[in-house]
Image 1 (cartoon, helix red, strand yellow):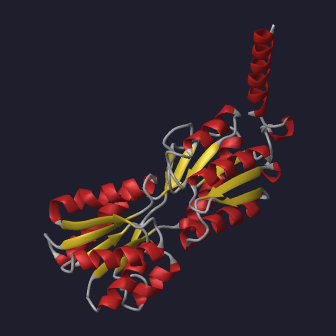
Image 2 (tube, helix red, strand yellow):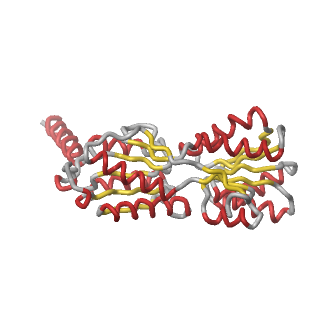
Image 3 (cartoon, rainbow, N blue to C red):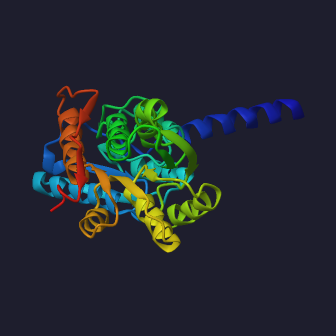
Amino acid sequence: MRKLFVLLMSVSLVFLGACSLQPPEWAKPSGDKSPDDIKLGLSVSTLNNPFFVSIKEGVEKEAEAQGMEVIVVDAQNDAAKQINDVEDLIQQGVDALLINPTDSSAISTAVQSANSLGIPVVTLDRSADKGEVATLVSSDNEKGGEMAGQYLVDQLGEGAKVAELEGVPGASATRERGAGFHNIADEQLDVIAKQTANFDRTEGLNTMENILQGHPDVEAVFAHNDEMALGAYQAIQSSGKDILVIGFDGNEDALNSIKEGNLSATVAQQPEKIGELAVQAGADVLQGEEVQDSIPVPLKMMTEDTSE
């Protein structure tokens, strides 16, 4: 009798657990909504980076123009927090999710949760490794990495000794920018140091200080984003060395630094445009229209000559 009671209790708990995975009825997407009835959920990897702030602003401006509501959450570069944030957005009844992943692998579980409920997902700047994504709105990160590598070859010649500051491990942008850079660098440059600085300015400074101690002969640095490039330049300036630094994003601080003759260049994206196109893609999907698997946003090399 005791065994039967335990078995019944176990079955009940499993049933209740399965039920708890479903959001309340009011939180499920209803479909066929006009733009002014649409509620979007935007999950940003971090709002401690001007690039992602610009993406958020692009989303908000386009959503306001179309009369949509947007709920914004900041993952603070924490993959676990981002998963919880997305689950909360689902519970709040969003019609579509716009996600800028902190970690392309970790976010897959949240994307799959949305898939199971029929909530469309659009990713921005970085992809998700698994789950169904309606479209990825981003720059061609691999092409941008190639542009950075070619810039260093053009400026310093083949065989120049360079260092690479990598972004957050696991982020698709880190993989793609690095892959593009090495398409050029492995054949024409000498990459003598490669370390992650997590897309962060302070980490860029500290990591560059360590690289300078171990490799005083470094001639140039490619940083996977402008924040790390600006941190690296601080370390280089303190060392008194003359080292070329190129970043990636084209944020305001980097462009000002280039104008002042500090940073050498940046591969500039259009973050507000990424946000704008992501909203348009989300609206199209909700209205039953087909969208491309990926929506590219053009890149531009910004130097002292082009940033005026």
